[in-house]
Length: 637
Image 1 (cartoon, rainbow, N blue to C red):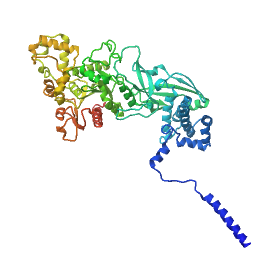
Image 2 (image 1 turned 120 degrees about the horizontal axis):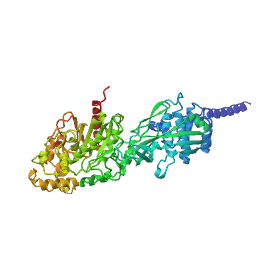
Image 3 (image 1 turned 90 degrees about the vertical axis):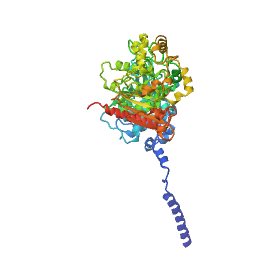
Image 4 (image 1 turned 120 degrees about the vertical axis):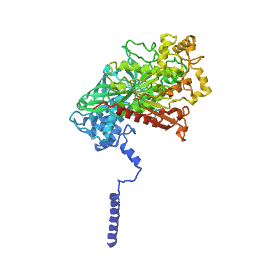
């Protein structure tokens, strides 16, 4: 008995131990992990990882639908939709948006992209008086992104991945959606937008930063097609792609989702038009991708070919037959005079101060890409400034090119503000790099006869020349401060010439520069009719820009003696290579001694080469100066 009892007790103890072992094992554990891995795990979503976020999966698990969604995603989404309440129910609505996008990605079924966009829209804009998620909830930002990407993917990608907008009725898993794309929405500044490409589909190289203004809408870029009608007042950057955003406005989304009949009206926004859209009585930022549009504009631009061709040929015109320009009564692009060198990235914006960027020798406006990218994506600058670009043949004499710049600016002011009612237009900032800095200076000096006296012994009116030649000489030799120029910035500017221009090789290069026909006529009439009235007894050819920038050349010496006019602030940005004493250095083309001038409001030395437009310090200094200029020209309160 005792043995049996002991055995019985021992057996019971063993069973109890087994039972306790099972009950006391701990299935839930926590271990220390890499915080970055944890952060990735809790913030991942279908757009960043290709897998639904924890929050959407939690909705499935709470409802016991996790396994079913794996087997039958379409059926599970239909069940979730049927259970969706008429108001609120934010968790289910958010999950439906993300899980629909996930299912669309896996099946390439565009209907579910539409559903993802519609669910996200209903979560973001449930209607006046209805509440949505707290601003700190990460599902709110995800809803914006799902809406934006859902529209892009749903609008029937065309050839080469283009996004195609067409009015029509499209089938949905729950019914149908009627999409309205008004034809007028495709118009931009007298042209028509076409060939839309989603910014999210593009990678960008060559720009220091890629900027996106977050908000609502599918960020795209569009080509331009000139429409019939009056000529345009602006000549746009060749190959320009415009940042454009499509916003699909759904009518009464919560009710429409329940009935299965949705209606969406497409609205297309560009940054120059509006940066917000009004929904349910509140202004919502529009999402724009400006950097990829700029990069796309530059990728195949004819301006790259222009850089050397435009230096060696004073008549090379890369824009002919590419873009439409001028205004009613002025010549077309193929007949246009060479002085119309301004290029625009957007329509003229009244009340915005022009920043005019003037490139250097054997260069083009394309070289300003990083500065344009930085300035146009600085909100405070965007609200005050507009960027203009000047294109010119850089082998031509500097005085002649400066006259072309001045004439282009004068005509632009007359064209845009004939009644002189836009004060911002008369506060221009002209920024010139290298030779472009000399052109910029000639918008802000009073030369009197100082430059002309280096050419002739007698006044211009006493020369025996035709009136067209006289006008060309007057434009190229006599300068007064332009009344609309409010500030100038010199970047790597050879104020006293470039030591590189004095090399014998540079002189040989100058011999190959072909000048435009009107300058050839100038030379002919000067030599044939006025030899004894010129300073130079023998003149085989007119000087090129390289000649003008050779240290000791009469032109550059005379220009260096001219101060910037009082009342026009000037700034110098000087690049110096290496780590030595700046005053003894150079940028590979221009020495500090040549670039430095007295009387400027500020001078900044940056470490780098002559191609300094890409340096972050240069962008930041220009930004600083423009903020100062904006403050000095603020409208009175």
